[in-house]
Each structure stands twice: as structure tokens, then as C-alpha cells.
Amino acid sequence: MPFPLAPAELETPEAEPVPLHEAYRACEEIARAHYENFPVASRFIPADRRIALAAIYAFARQADDIADARAPSEDRLRALDAIEEALLRALDGAPQGAIFTALADAVERHRLPVEPFLDLLSAFRLDARDATFPTWDDLLAYCRGSANPVGRLVLALYKVEDPEALRASDAVCTALQLTNFWQDLGQDVARGRFFLPVEDLRHFGVNPEEITRPSSRSSLTRLLTHECRATRDLFARGAPVVRVTPLLLSVHLRATIAGGRAILRSVERLGWRVLERRPTLSGAARAGIAIRALLGLDG
Image 1: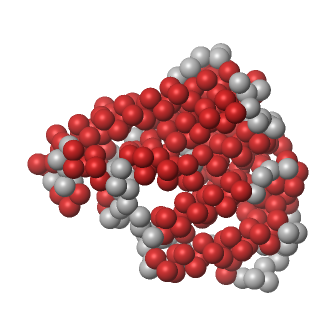
Image 2: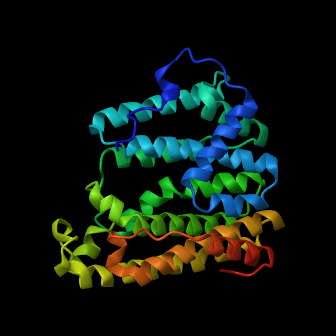
Image 3: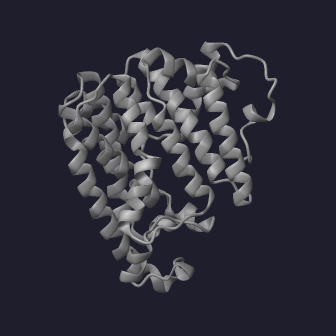
């Protein structure tokens, strides 16, 4: 089913104010529904920061849904412009709807920077234009806008400004974004757009027009193995972030990284079958991740 072209909150400019506690509750529901690691990782975050993180996730989810909507590119771009206008109004003291009410409070309460939110919207505009990525470096550049800003906002919640932590966070966020691309490959192929770099498709002999055919299975499996290894290297590069962040945040990050790595291993095991079965974390796997994170063990 197509996503709505624009969020309901933007369809009614005269919407009634939303009580703050209801706004945050709505954001937490969105985060739990759409981010597989959120229920596990977020339990290690103090309540005031957890609800702020939920507001950040809900904003990103809302904008991402618009960028991916089955609608003409120009309509999606206009809707993203409306999102940006609503964001700026909210930060100027006139929030509208649950997400922007919670987000405006979170930004003010935690003194969060505005630039990462604008970076996210810039990346989502690329999605709305149905951009493709000629090279691996082009894909990484996209992730710098679509994923890394969220990690930097998480660090900002804890007032972490250490350059090493920022670099490590960027690597983790890019790895998580890439893992999500490989995890969602079947869904993305079905809607006619996916994130495998063109140069890699050519190198492994995968024709995008024939990617679902049995003749492409072995080549696609080799390609996914290649992408998973590169993604695993990014997780390794970012893993030190858990050693340069406060204790509770480091537990949260351990759980997030472990969840991403577990999904990545599933993608690599499935190979071409990821087109037919989207890998997810079982309840037992999530519990194990939580326990290992509490014990300070890497996943």
C-alpha cells in the first residue's frame, strides 16, 4: 500500500495543540513500530533522553516515508519542503502536531543542533528524486546525510563532542544504514529502487532488470557477500564508540551495534534468498543482545 503523500499533521494547519506527554507517547509508538533495535537498545537510556530519541526517530521516519511514497517526484519534494517549513516553525515556537511538538521540546530541552535535521532532509530529497549511486563512495556520501546525523544527535543528547566518538558514530550509523539496505533488498526491488552501487552490480555481473531471475542468484549472492564484508568493516571501525561514551549510552550502543551485526550475518547467510525473506531479530535474539550489552560484551 502506498504511503500517504504528506503526514496528516501537515494536512490541517489549524490542528489543535497536542499535549506534550501525548506527543512523546506517539513518537515512542512510531519508534517501536519502525526501528527493530529501538525496543532493545532504548531500555538502557534514561527516560528523558529516550523520549527525545523517539522524537528524533519519529521525525526521520515521517520524512523517509514521504521520500519513499509512491507519488511523482515533484510531489514528494514539495512535501519534504513542507516538512522543513514545519520543522523550522516548530523550532521557532509554533509546533504543529505530535511529532513536531515533541521534537521542538527535545531540541530546546537538550540543546540539540538543528543542522543534523536539515542534513536528513537533504538526503531524503535524493530519495525523492529516485537517485542511484554509481559507486560505493557515492553510497557512503548518501549515508553521511541519511544516517550519520541521527548518531550525532544521539551523542548530542549526552553532550559528547569528542572527535573520535563522532568518527566512530558515523561509521556505525553508516553500517546500520547499509545493513538496512541489504535487509530490505526484496522490498526495494519490488518497488523498483534499490541501493546497490552500479559499479558493484556490473563487477559481479548482476543486471538490475534481471535481479529476481534464477540466473542471477549466484552472482547476487557473491555481490551481497562483498557488500556485507564492507559493511562489517564499518561496524568494526565504529565499535570503539562504546569505549569513549558514557556508561548507559555505551550499553545502548553495544545493543544497537549487536543488533545490526546480527541482521548482517543473516543477510550473508541468506544470500539471494533475501529477495524472498527479510531477515529480522527473534525475541530470543533480542534478549541475548540485551544481556550481552549489559555485561559489556560485543555482539
